[in-house]
Image (tube, rainbow, N blue to C red):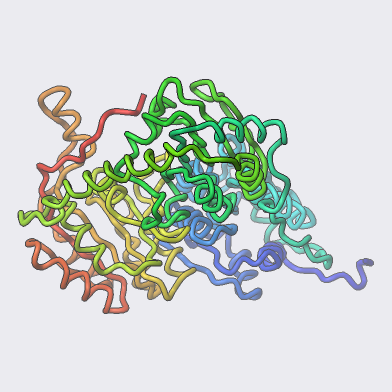
Length: 550
């Protein structure tokens, strides 16, 4: 194309055109002068700007968009502290394999090294966390770098990518590329794992008497839920789920188990581990019996060695891999599998029955399990539930049931508090007709509580439920068990976070007694407004756990 007929646009418009061509509809940000050109471009291209109160929330909201839509989430962070404020969310996206594009402002190129406002080179400290990190040095590079970054973020294993734009570059003009971007890749339709690996794993499954499937977040990103259900239903294999895999097999499916996980993993003779690492959540592999044969299934090889030997490794597109494994493992199923399933169901039922007293506990302040018992009664089947906290959310992970993919969102293995309000903002914007519930510990609320203002300003009707026990329970109880005392683990008891929410434009509800909870939840959902239900909980209740950090 000659320069006489080329379309010349400023850098921010070039960015926005490229985002729009890839289907991006929302950009999460906090206003910064280095980004004005991007804002102008987004306004021209019809991309909605969603501004928040802290850059960490902008990045978490973009990651949350990725998590609940399985598509690219995008945020723009201004130069210097804007980018550094987003680092925890970028690290979270890296460990969660969330497809995230972070756009950074940057001090002007022509003044580089002279001490401009917020001048710092972001790329060296962002690079270890992202799949691609680059700086556009002239307007003509913008679209090409964005294409590379989007492709990197969207290619399995998915993850974050980063591009920043010097002030003079993004305000300058360049020629627009009139060629449309290539159609988005659908990597889940690609080839599955190597045939010899499939044969080895299939042989193990054919002979297994006590097989299990343990699936995690990678199953969700790899869109393998339908193939997994077909596999476990035909081969009669019990299923356990963590992370974003929750809901990929509905909680009321006959082969789904949660309370029997210790028994199921600890007594399995073959374990098919799909899309989740053998990390602290699985005791670094020790959750499985020492003589269990482990089959690892994922979209790509992990970045580090497995902490224990595995019998087979299947790397490739999950639908094709799981379908080939199902076909290869067909054969006369061993009769003990039905006995195995029945034994796990008995454990599951027994443990659920033992919870009844706590679910109906009449104490005030409330037992956290009573909260989730009441909440479950008002949740719709496709409700999106978001967890942001320690002990309070640990109880939720045990009790809240998911029936569809993308209905449970938590921080993941990076465990960064403060993610919840950003996740909730994105979830409700992307699914406005569905219930979105945010479960917050009172400690976690302190990280991002001002984002209640963001929900109110944008009219985003997330319902937040705060477990207010006035302590850092995840630290206080273990420290007291170890040392007989705790330090730095106290919060102000009985804080009226509901009044804070009202001051920021939300509905506030205060719950002191169990009988007050259900009506408060019903009012919150019926209001059509962002709401916070502040529930006083018993600080003496500790989530039962054993240390698995190391």
